[in-house]
Amino acid sequence: ERHIAFNKVMEDADPSYPIAGTHRDTDILKPILTRKFDITKEDIQENLRGKEILCVVEGIEPMVSGTFQALHSYKVEDIAFDSCFAPCVSQIKNKAVVDLDSFHQVVPVKATGSQLSVLETRSMSSGSTLESTRRALF
Image (cartoon, rainbow, N blue to C red):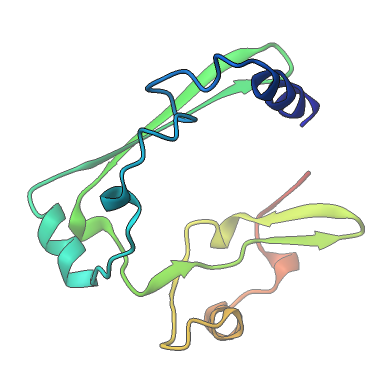
């Protein structure tokens, strides 16, 4: 956080910033690119038909500074529309607890999209308690 704040101060003080063509260049954003527009689920499904979304997650393991990557691809039929991931992280005795049994669980979102409806769905559909599930403590 301090590094980001320091860079901002340095860039604001340097008259050559932002460098043309970078993400901070105000001339690169055209009004047509920032205009809001409505897109439907059907629009997404149609535009993704026959295409693949590639996801790359890269990180550094802090103990030995080892780099790792996770690669995955998705097609339109892999996307769960009108759904979200079930809550899987809670706090017990000031420790984060990850419920690994619900880590990949997807639950439907009601038309209201409220968080309460998602939590109610999870508690009704889950047949096990937090103590009886696999979990990871952090």
